[in-house]
Image (tube, rainbow over all chains, first blue to last red; front, side, top):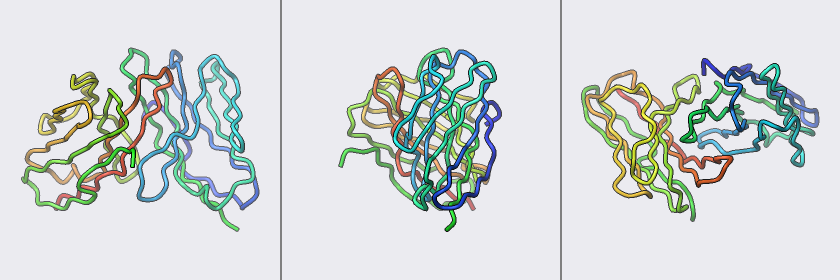
Length: 112
Length: 113
């Protein structure tokens, strides 16, 4: 997406941490999200963060939000082969009606 | 199974034809969406309905016409198909929660020849 930017590829070794970065544009976005898409499937919400938070941790996932720089990151600890997928960052666009703007997705490849 | 389902999963058709994709959700959600995902995986919203009422209508050619007969169904009809319409179309739905989790269907891969 032209308003939400992500790097396209990330390759990590199994057991290492993965960090996927995203920049967004709408400073009034209330929520920011990370969705996961496995091959041949639809997107599934992994986690989200409210805009007044700096960090959210959920098991192996850590989301960091820097509102000043409009930067969002997703850290996956102890990355497994099952984590191989495309990860989409999304922002909720202000103006109501739950409109999400997605980034182009980061393809995470986990190798042994 | 509670889910968002779409039919068909694959659709191959000739340029100029008219086709429909159906979507149903049994999650009791009020809001449904259509997204288009191109070959580079870029996902863009096309339409959204809330309780059968159109609430989001992005810059989409008027060859695309969504129809919501009830709040559990949102179908997408495409007239005069063009090569550039080839993509994966995803339906999604969401409940009225503050954080707006959207539940996606498995997608319909449309190939226009």
